[in-house]
Length: 333
Length: 259
Image 1: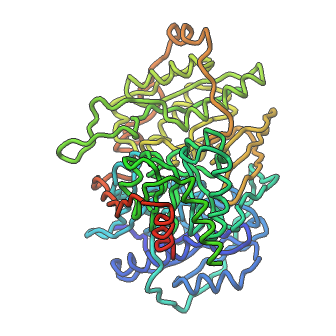
Image 2 (image 1 turned 120 degrees about the vertical axis):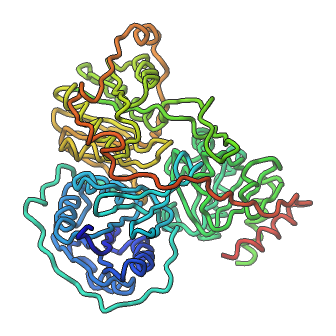
Image 3 (image 1 turned 135 degrees about the horizontal axis):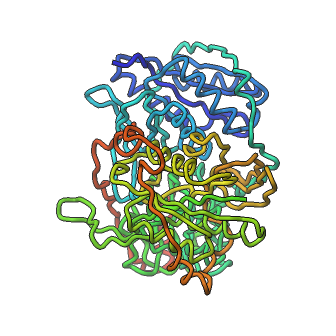
């Protein structure tokens, strides 16, 4: 029987020193897991330079953490694989959690494998479901094989680690606790970084959110045909406080930037509403967007596979429908 | 400068067929180079075009037919390559795979400056192996790299794509890069490439050849194991409406976008 106990969650901060959304999702899920593990302690590890610290603490308290390990250093101002991973490896070696979870963000997926490799333990990537099995092990389920197969994965070493896809788990029934904040020092050997961010170029669409954070995505495929079509999608997205996405086909045609691509060789998104315009719905595209809460598809080809997964499918001419939809939304103000 | 290129042969996951028992039909499933590895390959070739002293070694771990992806890389301009193949490697998770690849690199390739991998493999989709190779070799790493901007004797500068934009990152060498889809087009095979690729010697190395022990590779060296694999619930499409007019279509959409 292992001496490892408790669930540790990486409290990732955004560039503006706010706790990213997936942390609350993980905390909420951890409460369910903990209930099946004799209420083991749920902790967060926070690496901060001190900016916005009161709000961060308030956020973590409201997310239901029992304990937060606060490690403060000005070096944590910007993310570095070296500095962050070494600090977390030290903490994990000290507190010995049974489970450690990260959001499957670009940062989480950069950091977690380095930590797992250093600790020689298993890491299950980009999970969409977590559970505790009858033996008290973490059972982490994830899509694999291009979304064609689901696999439930167990780990025989500790901590059992997983990255979890943002916006999939629900935040519900949070028990706010009297969170204990424990200050930890960072080891001097942790502070050397071999990488440096020399420049950051922000690229967020007019709604001020990223493709991965957006609640509404209006995505265009080859059926949109030209730049004028895409500028209409942009206008539509703007009216819905959403952002524009694209298929690989549309990106390859030069109609959209590759940072907008949704699907296997692009991004995975889970918005509340996904409007697929002129998208046939190849499996490579579906795997990146099928987790959307509601899918509306507009396509002139009634045999398009997108209709197999759309909640609402409209067989019609997008060149007529989109402009009218824009007018209607404008009229309603 | 010496570049190691990690490539993987994967089944074409866009073309999956199911057997009656709800398992994936492996027969007749076409094998391709993992698309993300072609982005890595292209990045390496571009460096070679700009710098005459670049040497690229491509490596793959897999069954003997994985030799095909090594020969394909040679036809595009990679200098040499080898296959790491052993029945004992079967069932490897990302920890065991990275141990094997790191072991092969350490024992068979000297003076490595840069390791280039694809960010994801489309069959496993874990995106973990490159980061784990970096950790095991003690190299720095940069993930989600869209483009290599410049390389000098001991530094590399790249463009990394993150959720909210682009970071320009500088790293010491040696370094492991994980590549995502670039904005430029990929190269076509060289005129002399096919001949070179056909005639080149592609060695095979076993577990013993790269100096690893059975406990660190394959199923034995894997902390994780699959307890259950199943077909995902198919999302059922809702109503499909043939709009009589665009006005009808707009009405239906308006009723459905109140989120």
